[in-house]
Length: 188
Image (cartoon, rainbow, N blue to C red; front, side, top):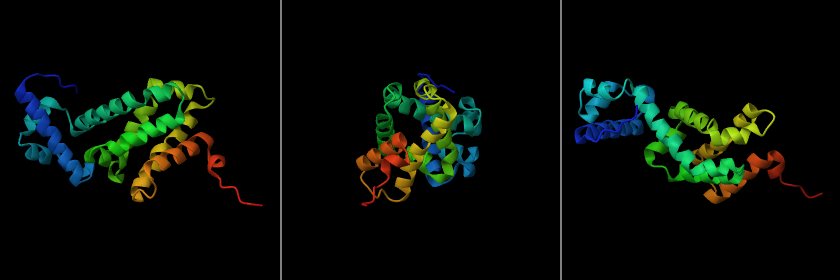
């Protein structure tokens, strides 16, 4: 649901809903968040919430679309130019610079469904559709591309064992050249 009202009360209410939702995201998994809890934290009644959103999922989808739009704003040029390293670098920098709520939504296992929805929307965008359409089996290549985010999430889970720029370089080679690109040659 797009909210464009200039009414100060509406903007304050939407901000209160959003802030309460963000606090709850940081405290618990999505399945444990209730509208009652959200409205109490936002200091509004349920009826007010339903004036703006049809469900908690509606609010979540709005947040998801904002993140997708933000990622695509930054990454579309690299995708359109078939620049794999540019896509990886832009995406990893985006993830690394996210605020705490976005980090949780995109990297925490309790919000895996959110990450999948965002990834799916980004990879189905026009810029990436062109990227994949140049291959014989676009769905297979799209599936392979999802590993970009798995690499980053694993890096976070393992407490960032290498510098971000090194991760970007290594992941770019893996994505672009596969296993052959990173295989260390043993001396004969």
